[in-house]
Length: 215
Image (tube, rainbow, N blue to C red):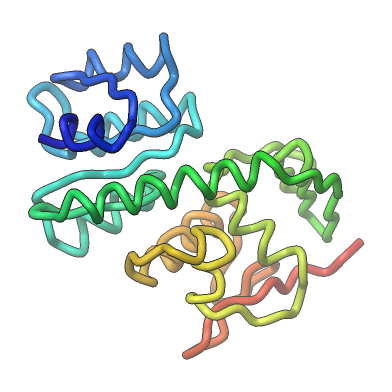
């Protein structure tokens, strides 16, 4: 049903009936975006997402019948760009797909070439790399964009809604909770203690700000 609807919307679709086939297709012919069902016959969708993220930053939208908050948090923490719960409107899915693809094209078209350097942290916005104490650290494309948005204006407080608009796009209509999940991921990768942050501080009841000291 999803394939037929998306083809009617003008998308070119490659369909896989199981996780192994899907991973092979992604590796041989990388698509612009992956719609990944969490309930697969041969592997859990979250595990497949981990395998995709180990080698690729391709945008992934999780599709699942599970509505529990824990499932959404796990999927987002592993690296999903968005999460759609069944039953859903095909129009909603198409809108989310287009929003994710627009965000990717917007980022690809940026010509910013700037090295942001702080005590213990270096962010190369042109090469899209992050170093923590001279060691490369791995962030998903979305997490890099979130860190770059915060660090571009140290000390400025961003609400979750403002970060959603800057990173996910103005037409994103998912839950603000997604910001908290990805902030948690970034902190974990950077070894940043939220109780005594070196980089990302929480402004209770408002949002987040970058607190790193410029070099």
